[in-house]
Length: 265
Length: 313
Image (cartoon, rainbow over all chains, first blue to last red; front, side, top):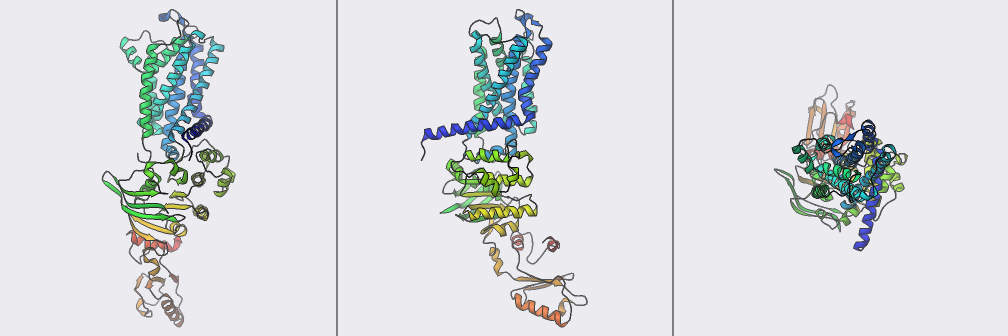
């Protein structure tokens, strides 16, 4: 009989291996890799090049790129976590791969941890690439003083959108419908949440709607950390609270999805 | 100890009773087959045994454990080929066998399995590029990766061409040689006949016959069937008297069902020689498992045969 710590170590090892296999499968699917990884980069280059010379009057003449880089980074995080994990999980479910996995001795948590780790690796790579391009191409960067705020928003936002991505699969009837469902859930929010342009002038009611959702909290939290005028550690308490609440919702939805038996749907 | 024990198993879905008080056991090392038409409840039973579905009533043990408990120990010792089930498309055959192998404490090497299912040439091919038959062979290899004691095969050759099926049968027989217990479902009579030690025939959620393929439904005790074309210019009444349970003609096709096959054959052929006539399409045959099966499942009356059958075999 093996002891509990030995089993735990083994299952953690299995989760790590799973992350590597998931990474391999992810990069081999060119279309999905482009959608989740390269599209945010593409938007960064396009928007930053077109609007780079503008400033935002409502924010004391903040250069547009200091605002837009963290905005597109928020979009990128949503693409590599929420979109990517929800679409691929819906496909794996529809193809019966999840059912097959359930029949193996791999613990369900090891499998899920491996998939989450893989999506985290992709997110970190995308973030690093955005930061490098922003710095070298457009001179935008996070100051050391507000680095803590940047990391908090990045980690909390990624966790939040990963769990929501897994949790939302329960509401996606079939994988073909997944991109449509996800776009309906996210795209309108990105427009009212200041991902692409400043929403400081939009009506108060619309701003309040946006502030309920995690898209705004993530974009705003990152923009707060990127803003050269921010004082302190760059942690925006309101955004952190909103992300934490949505993380809780995401964890609950994720657990409900994972507990669902796959044999009888 | 029996590999599988099922007592009074029932499964209800809302209004439908998919399985009704089914009982059977499967001995260790046996090839056991559930045979029945689509919708008879084969897959429901199989998925209850595999731990995918809950049961409404009854007792079930698989390798001494309750599959509903979902113990990891059980999943270590059981291999599953589901009826239709995808696999991570982006990975190659070799990578998949390696990946699934890691999940098991005890495992068989990818090389050995690839050789067993004859996918040597496809080792570095991604699953997405495999043909249907190759995919099914990969399914089998993946089910065997943990060197299981018990293997579930749910309609393993559906969609195969005849050659691929014979191939798969040879592989499955090789598994029996390794001492595995095999639980098979199929709606192909010949598959059950070729592979199974014992067959349970299912109809509408119940087992209606259970036994060795040769004895099923009293097949060994059934009358032998003699068939031929009535020669031109002769009628049924002009044939010699033979001890027969049934003597009939459909058009010019004669069917005689008798318990004294040798005597009846000799009488009829002697008569043909005496009258110098040829009996076209003359045949003497034991009822096939298919005949018994179709009778049991109520799809055909005794002695009745489809016209296409001769052409098919």
